[in-house]
Length: 297
Image 1 (cartoon, rainbow, N blue to C red):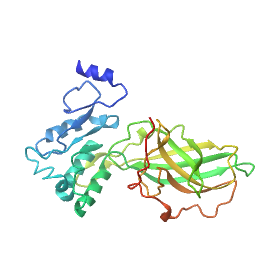
Image 2: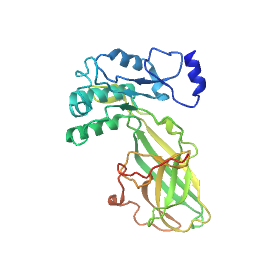
Image 3: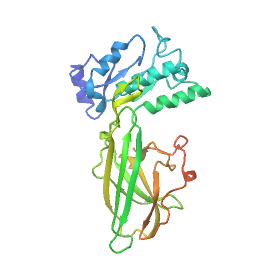
Image 4: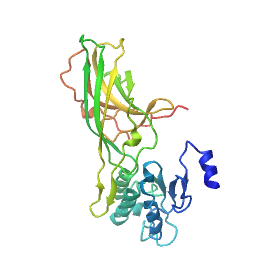
């Protein structure tokens, strides 16, 4: 009865439950409030037994430090969890095995501790999605040699994280003015569903790798350019947009980044010749310090 009520009330939301052996007839995610705890290996096994549910439902929770044998695992404190290799690898193994997306409390480690800061970055990279672009190919095609015609683009991407992105958000390609980085044209891939960019599966704790590695997804698109687009050199960029306001919101895990959320890929000539497509690395921004991303309701 309760499961039916929640399913009806939250048809477009993720519903998470604490125990994997409850609400077994409902397609709910999991919020485990003692993630990777030494006294709850049965809980981990129960989540693992849900099979492929992680492909469509969130697996996450909290890390508990206040009961049982928490000193055995996950450690004395968040700082201990991420700085001690024994605790950190156990945490990462559990995230990888169960395809975890996020955890509370463990983020409260001491960021002034160099070992904790480095370990925290390793744990962060294991969480959720991590979209790595391995290759981008693009060309402007125009029979008349002017700015009209089409832009043909393909890119190869892998999800080296542990979980998918669970919403169908669009991927944008844009042309930016080199001087201002303003988008003067943009288009969206019609047939790309980023929910299908799955990570690897079958975590091997000894090898510290998935037995089924993350596959490479090749996405392609052909885009008609605006007739009023001026000839010249532009910076081609990619971004994942929040559909609520069609603004960049999800970042790729690559160094090519501009403040505002777009990822510059290279220079392209639209009705013009380009001698060098590569962008200088010192022109990129730092996504960690970018506070400009926002939502439009």
